[in-house]
Image 1 (cartoon, one colour):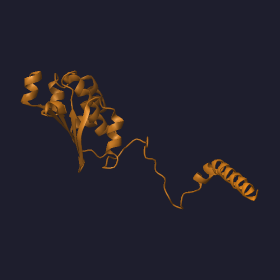
Image 2 (tube, helix red, strand yellow):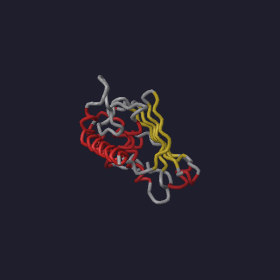
Image 3 (cartoon, helix red, strand yellow):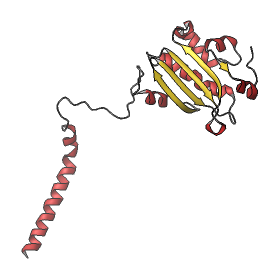
Length: 184
């Protein structure tokens, strides 16, 4: 009989202890950090203003690019991005929307990008050959003109020689073979 009484007492103590932990756990969590400790969320929704090796992935993911992202490099205020473009289902006009978004975000959203190089490559299935490059610098005069930057959304650099020059678009022989020479 004593064993049964002891067993029932242990069960009741366990149940009461568990209920107390469930009830008190939110209060314990709020006050459990050591003095001076800083809590940092893994996924932060703050806007990134200064690009570095620790937040570059969050920044790029936040852009919601349509093309597949290849290699990304960040070094001495130089941002190099490779986009694996869908040459089967999409036309070059569609790829350039990602290029425009990258250029705008690089110089409007963050403060420390001095130059962005974008490489447009075939997808992995087609050997990743280079199709074209884009090279834009913060020192370009048009970067600091809001109305000019806004025009980039509505222009097609392949058919606009001024924009092709501003973005320093260079196409490879593979591009010319597949899509022809951009109009001058």
